Length: 146
Length: 141
Image: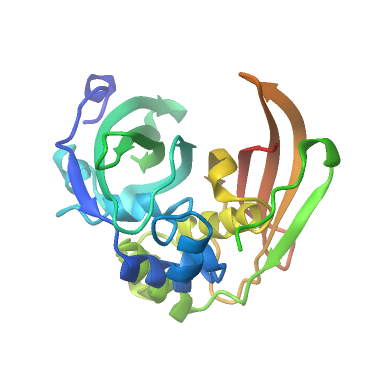
């Protein structure tokens, strides 16, 4: 059972390289055509070290970790009962193709709603780059139906 | 070119950002996003899996629509000026839905010496149903 005792549970950091190929595939999937996201020469000409990582892509990189849903299984949550309710980002520094990003996630909050019909969990992830700079923090609100 | 940042002094509360009209949502679009995003939850690509969780059919990833809302902001100003970006996934978006993403300046503010605008963002379908509602906090010089 998921309850407040899970708050603070932390997961092993995961590090992944940002590749140009991944960014191009993502840009195509969201219809993005601006040069800083799809044209490496244009990105460099405007002061970027490579293609720019778009605002929501870091969440996808974290899904690259082996067994991305293991944290739910560990809590005995059936993924079929899970809804992604909300997502938020706080940005501190840009990220580009060629960076290596490290994701450190934890459970930031667990709240039971509607007399136990729903459990709302917030998973918070700090993202740092290869220089140790804070790149962003994101929070995923996961709603679990009883 | 990076989007040219509008000047803080030149924008007003209530002003609309240029909207973004997407092609009708298709299964191909969702497969493409599933592969590019690594979100391989089958509810987005397999009708049976979607029905098993009570949906009528496959439905779009919330994060695909949040990416579209992000494009409304980065078409308007440079991404480096985005400070915060939030979205709530309000309702399911199904194949055939024609989504329009819009942004509206809610508030001009100063925080820690930085001039900022808070932008309301929505993804709405052809029937006026809100699918995703969000906000972005963006610095403007």
